[in-house]
Each structure stands twice: as structure tokens, then as C-alpha cells.
Image 1 (cartoon, rainbow, N blue to C red):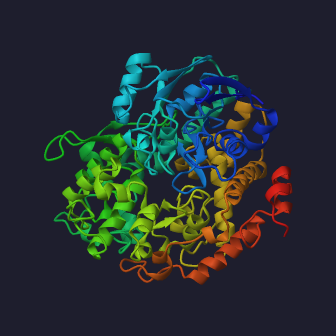
Image 2: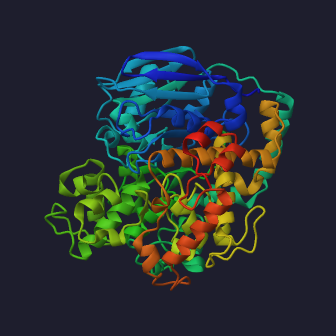
Image 3: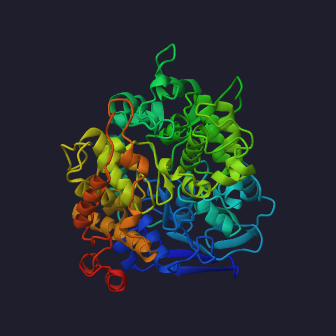
Length: 627
């Protein structure tokens, strides 16, 4: 197979050792690259029951198979680890330029194990690899740290760093790849537990592609498809939050005030009748430039800056749709400048903005219910919509400061366990991971998808919000978001599909332009191998089953494929989806559907027969269910 390096870089920080290891052809054939290879390495390296903060918990960085090829939107690099937030499979994907550099340095994966005695960072320049002192970087925010590294090594180095939050082992901390975050699941805390502040990579080698002429033609063809699409116009004009008003008014599934509402009605009551969280309002006013991922020709990322007023000087890459929810509507805040400030606080500290905002929203409801007092909140009047207090509270969270910071710094599930008093009745998490910006009470297929997602509540594991919101996607049509019928098939298809994208390193915002069949020419030009749609989907299914087996090995079963109490007991209170919710019996029926179409047991364990079919023979014998 072409388009690969055949090597991984293995670094043991405890032993101060660097090793270059081979990756077999069979691994590429079965797992392609990116998330596929990263899953295989994690499964083989992390022992069952390992503490996420153990030196032996590996941190794996793997660029997708097509990353660096020049194919537009082939930009994504996968990071895997055992998650400290969920104690299960940890996965985060980002548009990291470091992934391109890693591939050009000659590696399809970087594996870091062990723990340094002092703060260090990795310097990788082709075959030259050094473990360097990072004492002067420890305590720096992600912007400062990356600036210093580039000053020391050169501006051509691409970087990934953790902020103070990762150093302090916040279980909601992330890894920042030049303002592209691998945010979810606590990867930043895993790096921090290893005393690893940063990774810096410069690659100058050429990757050998199977057919450069064909690759050039595929790049032209893909760009033509992208340039003629409505998606490009909307992404570049308004970013990922373009459908904010539609989600509120037309679908009624935008969570507000810790999911007590699903239409931010009061935000549309401004004198101009426009919610100030709507990018149609704020994008033209604050955007200073684009911030594309590698090889992206339809950038949704943008730099925004506040030039005057109370928050003058605030500058951030964003604000993405998910954060309009977690740092806006979910907090009862309709002031984009406040959301920008909250976004900036999270980004600089190296914190997952979804988890931080959702956890703060839970605390606001607890405060309003009288379950938290001012003594618990360090004197803060923690009410929904209290903008200045939200900013002060977020500073406490990201710094693990005071009683409030200590309570909330590790996410919502742990906070509810600490507080008690029935506060788990209004958490919005699955497996410990906070829920994204889709009220799944009005999207029942999405509800199933979040319940079964291997990394906890996640909109991107299966991407089921697309078919649920529009009624169709790819080969699926006539989808009723209020019905529970055929949801097992819908979710299984979406998960396998999206996993293929993560093995290739493709941006999921391009999925509606290429689907699977549109990628095959590019894959052949890069690798020389000819795949059909069924073969690609089988690879996605294999990778996904291996992720599920990782969780099975950690003791997760059907009981962990749950939905929060609020989702199964409290109907949506307002908007066009008012009255909808997912009854517990509906969830159990959908789980039965899903496990059956997956070829898993009633307990959600992949069967021996299914695993043999997927070429996971060893795993079948070790963990496969008998039925």
C-alpha cells in the first residue's frame, strides 16, 4: 500500500527512550489509518482496568490516511487514550497541522507512554527526536506555550499543547493544536499526568503516493464539488452555527438553561427580533479572518475579536455551534460577547468548552433549586443569565479554584456525585461525558446514538443529527425524528460511516458532499488499493466493534448505554417539539434493535460470530458473547 510511512514513533517518558516501530501491512489493510490505527494500538497497549492517570495509559496521535495528500478537507488527526472522564474508550479528533507534519516526518502514529519526573515536551524533526525540558512552559496557557516553542524551534514546527487545566489534571481538559482542540474526554489530563506539556513536529519528507497524476485530478474534482456547494458559502459566511435559528424555531431542539427549555425564545425578543447568538447577527460584526484546518477549502473556522466595550481585546477561534449552546443558551446567556469571553477562557486554559459550559449550567440549576448555597459557590450568585458571574465561575472551573472550582472541574457526573441531594436527576451526560447541542428528546434516533456511543454522549460518533433533523441522509430517507422505529439500523449505519471518515482523516462537514463513494477515487490515487463502499463500511464496522470491545473489557455493558433522567422523564417544555421525550421503555426497545443489527448480545457484547466475521478472531475468543 502506498501513501503510508509504515512506521510509528514510540516514546517512553519513564525510561527516556525513543523507538521507531514498524506498522504491518495487515494493520493498514484492516484499519487504514487515523482512528483505525489509533484504536488498534490503544486496544493492544492499554491493559484492562488501567487507571487513566497511570503512566502505562498510552496517548496515541494518528493522522488520517489521506491527511497531507492535498485532498481538500482531508484534515483530521485522531487522538486516543483511556478517558479519565468516562473510564472508557477515549477519542478526540481535530484539524491538527501537527498531523500533517507527523506524516511528513515519517510516522503514521505517535505513541507516548510512561511519565517524566519533570515537565517535558517532545521535539520531532524527521528522524531527530528529543525529549526536552519544559519547566519554563509549565503554567503557561496554550497560546503562550505554543508561541514560546515556535520561538525556540522555529515557526515551521507544528504544535500540540496542554494548558494549566491539563497540568492540574482536570478531567475535562483538552489538547490544543494551534487553536484546533482535541477537546472531549480529558486527553489534556492524560498528557498532564505524564508531565508532557507539548509536542512539536516538523516534517520535510515526501510521502510516496500511488498515482500523483490521478491524485491531482481527484483534488481538482473534489475542489469543484466543494466550490459549487451551498455548504461552502454558508460555512465561510457563518461557520458551524449557521443553522442556530432553524434549530430553535423550526426544530425546537436547542437546549436552554440546562435543558429546561428547548427553544431560546427570550433571546429572539430583542428590539431587532434577532437572537444575538445567531451568527447571522455576529459573524459579519466580529469576524477578522478565517482559520481553516489543513487542506480545507471551505473553512468554517474563523477568528473573532471584540474591538470595544467591556470585553475589548477578547479574541478567539470560534464561536462554534456547540459553544453557542454550552457557553450561551444552556447558561441562559444571549450575549455573544460573553460567550466569546467564556470561549477564550476555556481555550487558553485548555478546557473542553462543551463539558465546562454544560457542567456550569447544571450548577446554575442546582443553585436556583437551593441545592448549592453562596458558601458552595464562593459567594457567586450563580443564576441563569448572570453574565459576569458566569465568567467568574468559569475562571474558577478552569483553575480548579475555590469550592466551586473543585466541585465542577472534573465534569458534571462527578460534581453530581459529590453534591448528592438528587442533583443527578438534572445532569445531562452519558458515561460521564456531557451532552452536545441537540435536545435528543425531539430526536429519538439521536437519543439512541448518544446512549450507545463508545465515548459517551457524542453527536459525531454517528452523526445521527443530520438524518434526524432533515429526514434523510445518504441511502436513508423518510426518517421520523419522533418515532423509535428502525433506529438501530440508522445508528449502526451512521457509526460505521463516520468511523470510515475518521480513519481517512476526512472532515465530517464534507460527508454530505462525498458520502463514501465519492472518496474512493482519492483513496485509490493515494494508496493504489481499490475499495468499494461495502469494503470501506466493513472497515468502519471493524474499528467500531474494537472500540466497543475496549469498553467491554473495562466492564461496560447494557447498563452503561443509558440516557439521563431528564431525557426519559421530563418532556420538552416549549417550542415546536413541546411534549416530546424518550420513555425508558422506548430506549430499551431501541437498544434491542441496535444490538440485534450490530450482531451483539442482549447485554451489548459483540458475539463471537460477529467478531469472526470482522476478522477479530483473537478478540472473539477472549471477549465475544456466545449467542
